[in-house]
Length: 391
Image (tube, rainbow, N blue to C red; front, side, top):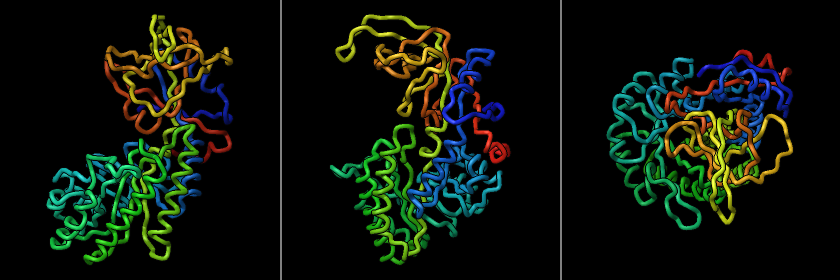
């Protein structure tokens, strides 16, 4: 990722965004990362979930937080991620090898480098783990609060399999130290988290009864951090606080961890793009007739995280009254950013800002058709310049 120097801005000002856009020598899109937003998210997490220690994924590019906020706990899936965080000095004891499905060679690498805390979710995966020092977290399935149907099918041990898997682990001499679950971000209903914590407690009790010293609970990720999603996040936090206080009270001395990478970075990143073309087509969508199709200069971007389009150039009072479909500039037929939504009228050549582009939206940015990854401009206020210059 090519990175510009840190820009100094005043909070809520569009001026540096406009200046950055107008200074672009070519039409390429670029990201803006607001370091002040990252800081506010860290403070919000610590305020709302003080008992839960955050781990973060290398793939979410959160290394900039580790120095200032001591968040050097890593929630990793692959060997290249392990290598990256170990190379910057993160202690092996502060790493969770979280993928329940691991390549044998990656397990060997983890063992050689002293990474011992790792997840598993099946008898077959358990047999692959040879390190006698491994500290294991059993990943359990998450069920919906209304119909008890699993919200995740790729990973997780179902409730009726937990005792059998833990019993075999005990017979094999493995050291299971806790339980892990992960609620899919699409299922951010507070009751789903409440039920997940309750089921984790049941699995904990089974492990304790079998003779394991159960000391770690991971409540995974799935925490929404986009602009306009804070109310939902606060309700989820209230549910989690209540559930862990009931089922895992502070007196038990349990270590509770989570992976809030998506929450931390989603709203910090915005994408600035240029309108390449537009055309009007006759269409009827949801009872509305007429549709403006707009093309923006960016590689393939799909399934964005509840984005909003904003203008950064005048006029600033444009109503949302144009039924619009926005396409990326690649030739891929699925490169549709949004379809049939009411937006403001756009002009060819103007710059637009798309918010909520951190986390998985950044990860999905593609070089399809020769588009490079958009560069990142980091912005901060002058008062905080000294604290972020070393990032």
